Amino acid sequence: MTVALAGGMSVAAQTTAVASSEPVTTQAADTCAYPYVCFFKNGVKIGQFQDVTTTWQDLPSRPSGPGLVVQNTRNDDVAYIRWSGGATACIPPKSSFTVSGGTLTGVRISSAATC
Image 1 (tube, rainbow, N blue to C red):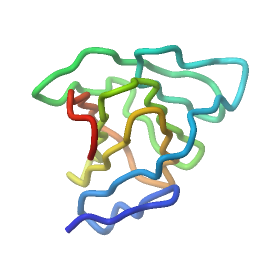
Image 2 (image 1 turned 90 degrees about the vertical axis):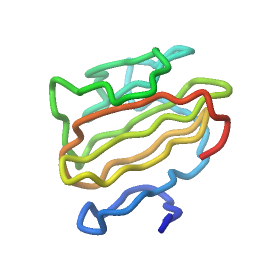
Image 3 (image 1 turned 135 degrees about the horizontal axis):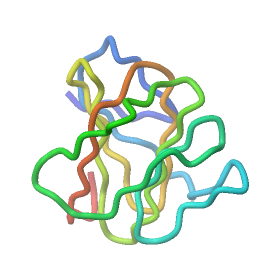
C-alpha cells in the first residue's frame, strides 16, 4: 500500500509513503546543495548524503520528528528514508519531506527518477 502525503507521516501506519513534490527550500542559513539529500532539525543541517546505493545507509544520529525536514536536491534521483519500525517514505527529486514523528534510521538514494 502506498500513501501520498502532503507533509508528514504517522509511523504507526507501517507502510510506504510518497512525499509531496514541494520545491526544495531552506529553513535557516544552512542550505542543501546539489547533489545531496540533507537532514535538517529545527532549521539546522544535521547530515547529508550523496551516494546512490542499493542498500540502506545508517543514520548515526537517529534523528526524530517533529522539527525534522529531509530535502532531496538531486535532479533525477529519488531518496528513501526509513523509520525505526520499518516504515519508509520516498522523496522525489527536488522536493522536501517533513517528518512529523518517529525516529529515522536509514536513507537510500536510488537512481530511479520517480517513486
